[in-house]
Image 1 (cartoon, rainbow, N blue to C red):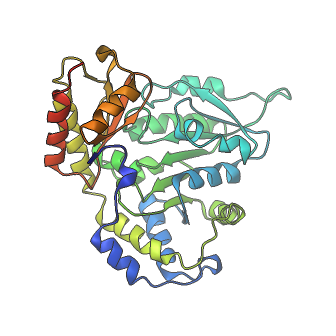
Image 2: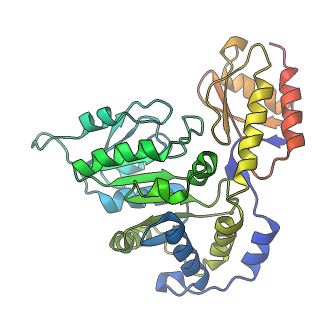
Image 3: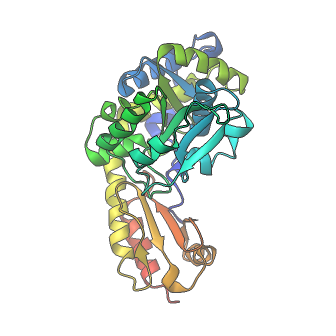
Length: 340
């Protein structure tokens, strides 16, 4: 089976498994897990932030950020296709008691003027705008890599209104590799940032939330409240260290695979590429086939290919560490043989 559903399906490498087996551990709730302490210190340095916190998932990291930044009744501004709004079960409202104010973007690029217009004025009828959330790379934007120059424009608007900026950087390393920019060129235009260790970087579990030291101290309490206080979690932290130290540069291979996949599939007369393939995500417009995306997914399964629907006429393919060039070529040839 050629699994192109997501980079979340990657399995830990041999080096990760060995590191996990040999990991030094302690009680992280007491701050005594040496592997996690080392991971958090490294992540903070790489992200250019004062401190970092290991969390169980990207969603948990994003929710802890919102909970720490905001108070019930506040409003946060984010893209209408943002993962925090679209894929996190309404948690910002359920847990933090905040309401989303969404803006339409162009493939993840929020317009600075629209952002400025969305910020609430000082009026008792309005909620307080307490946070601006960005996403890079942008999942529903087809893995779009948002350049630091654009992030700077949004950060400038936020600073003019004294509003913090949180970045959902689940695939931020993909953006840095694709644009050949240092990671800190992105994160310097954020107040806080969340990165996933378990997508393209291949760790089995975990994400990092990073920001100012006092913010992370408060975030640590929210992690505990959410049941995220873990004990001998250095077993996972050891895999995270391998992810940060050894798995970043190879993301370029996933990007090359995605471009090869897109180039191949674009040869089918009834399929077209629906996104600029910046990173490891390819969106295919299947509207000319007359099929619903779920029907197309069933066809793929019969051909031993897995993908995910991304709307009624769009299908998403995601490349990752556990795919090789031959599998990409095989997937292309199988799909090119489809008749509708």
